[in-house]
Image: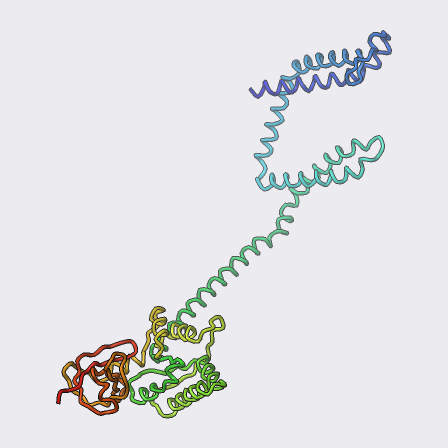
Length: 393
C-alpha cells in the first residue's frame, strides 16, 4: 500500500515538473514552428494553444518517466530511511532530543535572517534556502556537542523545584505545629476557665443588688467575671440625664465596689469587646461561650436566649422563689391587708419577702391585720402568688 502511494506522488511530481518545463520551453517551440494557429490565445489563464499542448505533453511525459523511475526512487528512499533509523538508534535519546532542538533553533534563525536578505536582487530568493540548510546543520551539531553545557545552565530548575518543595514542607510542618500548639493552648485555656468556674454578671443583676448578699453568703463558687462592656453600660446609665437612670447606674457601680471589697469572691475584669455585636446581652452570651462560664441575671429574655445558645444561666429571681417559705393549703398566717384586689371584694397583702397574698372577701378588712387560711398557691414567672381567706373567728 505504501509503495502505491509513493508511486502516485512520484508520478504526480514528475507530471508537474514535466508540465512546468514544457511550459517554459513553449515560447522557443513557437518560434521554431511559427504556425499562427498555435499562437492563438485560448482565453484561459492567458495561455496559447501551443502552451496548452506543451503542458499536456509535458505532463504525459512526466507521468511516464515517474512510473519508470518510481521503483528506483522508492528503493533509494527506503534505504535512506533505514540509514536514518539506524543512525538514530545508535544515538542516545538525549542526543536525538538535542538535535531536534538544535534543528528547530537553526531554522528559526535562518528564517529571521532570510527575511532580511531576501530583498537582494537575483540571489535574494535563494538565500533563505541556503540559510536554512546551513543554520539547520549548525544548530544540530552545536546542540549535540554542547548539550551538557547547555543542560548545566538549567540545573537551577531542579534545585529550585527541590527548594520550593522543602519550603512547602517546612511551612506545612510549621502550620501543623502551630495548629497543634493552638489546640493545646485552647485546651489549657478551657481547663483554666473550667477551674475558675467563671460567673458573668449582667447589668440588670448588678443594679438589682441582691448579688452582693448572695456572694457574701458563699453560695456562689468560682470567679466573678465583669466584662468591660457591662462597666461601660453602667457608666453610661450613671451619666444619664434622667434622675432615675442615674440613680440606678450609680447603685450598680456601688454594688460592684462592694463585691470587690467585702465579698469572698474573686473578681476579674475582662477587657474583650465584640465590635461586630451591638447589643450588650449578645456580647455577654458570646463571652460566656468563649470562657465556658455561666451568666448570672434576672432578665427573663436574656435567660431564654442564653439557654438557646447553650450558655448556662443562674437566675436570681428563680433563686429567690426557690428559697421562699413553702405554704400548703390549710396553713394559717397573719397579714395586713393593704389594697384592693382585681376581683370584687378581694384584698391584697404581702409577706416580708414580697410574696403577694390574694384574700377572698378581704376588702372589708382594709388596713387591718388579720389571720388568714391558705387555700392554694400559684407559681408564676414573676414569682409566687398565694390565695387565702379570712379565718373564722
